[in-house]
Amino acid sequence: MNTLVFSDTHLTTKFDKAKFAYLSKIISRADKVIINGDFWEGYLISFAEFLKSDWQNLFPLLKKKETVYIYGNHDEKKLVNEGVDRFSVAQAYSYKVVSPNYKVHIAHGDKLLTDQGFLSKLPNYKAMIWAGAQVQSVVVKAFGPESWKRIGGPQNEQMKLWKKTNLAADEILITGHSHFAEKDLKAGFVNAGFNANNWGQYLFLREELEFYQERIN
View (cartoon, one colour):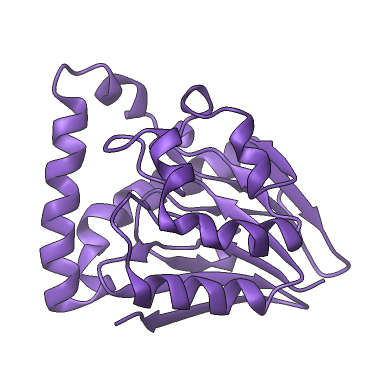
């Protein structure tokens, strides 16, 4: 099975032809797709608006690939309705894949962080998230994805600790959320990265876990 895993596309009603072409390309290369959270941007638009946007042209292709949709913190389960069936065959908070070569546990990652619950209760939490996204956009466009390590790296470390405590030693945790891609198989951890700010990052689960990164435009 040739399974694509991508996360953090944060799609809004603003349509990007280059990003659409990129997503169409990588989805077409897969036999199966797992969207690992933050597919659409629930802090800025409603799910109804997303379903009506030009991004709906991806839906038939995603459905054809028997896409599994994992909820993130920007596209929480409570924000969606039966419209998820237009682009996915199953929805969950986590998903497991077992092959002869590896076992993986896939989750967006936000619920694995020790400070996430506290931050989400702050009165200006969504404004803080939006401001952080603007900062990331400037930094990553200017200096590339590695420049986000100082922010995303510590979140990855927290998720590694969660993996060590909650999963079997031979199981690999695949996340997103932090927007910092990392493949640390010694720790049994892979972060699939993000797809924004002119960069695309994703995994293919084949005989091995293969990470890819490319400029979108």
